[in-house]
Length: 456
View 1 (tube, helix red, strand yellow):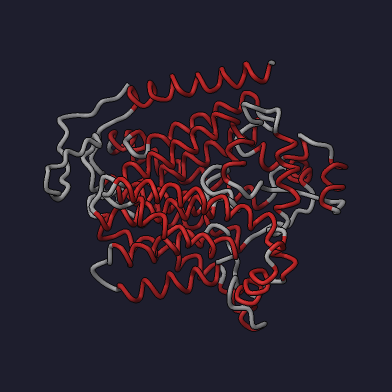
View 2 (cartoon, helix red, strand yellow; view 1 turned 180 degrees about the vertical axis):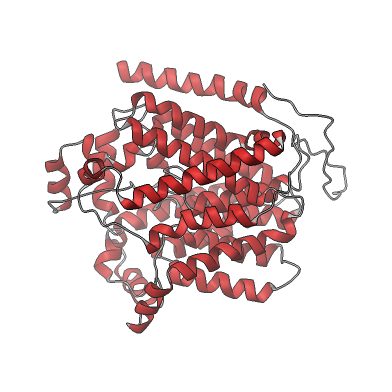
């Protein structure tokens, strides 16, 4: 009964307070066109430094016991430096502070605020508040990189810079894999396929004015090197996306239904691909992966049920990021070991962005996850035909790929970086208040010029 009352209370809270917060916090602010060199260096270093300087841990308790290791010190230092950069930008131009509260950034910013609030009931409060601050700092920095009046022209350039930085950081790993005959997933990275696919989709749907084929080749190479079975399968999102991006209401409904079916099939295959031996063997050959590894979704079929069991009574979550990373604090270690068949089991993530949202802030987190996704799609549908296809395809791929990765809702990562670029791409083509008035005959979208900014 207590859980039922809490369930109703949380749903009511979200349904009433989110629209109120959006109405009073949304701002109207023009792009500030900040210089990109310094934020790109800071963000790229933070994103890819762990690939060069890593600390292996086999026990989740070690993360708590070791405290500030060298890698953690570097992470904190980079976060602090980026925060100082943001403060300097705000000091020079106060309206910079309004950017995270402009649509369509606002839902994600509000979600970060909720993440920080979950520190009050987090199983590891210090970890939750730090991860929340880190997420805001680098989301804000990502906005400053992409939020520009010329982002339609420069988005491909900026995505290419980050892909090249990642390739440089993983060059030794790639070289070693290629030497052993491994091409696909030569430097597997669950976050980078979305960034590479986003560049590829951009070239297809909204070709950049220069270096078109070079960017497509870079996207293909990056996707191949970083990709996994899940990220490759997520490319089927393009089919439903084409239908949803149509102006025809019937086709849109068919597209929504197709997207739901795709998610169900995608998750089903992840959990029990072994039920389709011919498909399993084909994928194992194409992806250069052992069939036994693909058969159970790289262990997800084992630990997803365990993860759900450990978090099912935490309707408000167990603290942003902490609920994901420190699952051993919610369920006895012996239960994890028995389920997985490993003694020193350590889960760093649920490897599902909706489960990550659930573990962190419970039903409110899942509500924000759905709101962020739907807001981005609805704003993307206000663009011209090529823009709609680009945005919806990217978002549906993000959802499908997010079935097996932390996606947007565990901590800051390359997915959040690219997502900020997608939001900036939308914002540059829609009036600041989002109110697009369409004539009987479709006319090009123009930007409204606001008379001022509205803040709470």
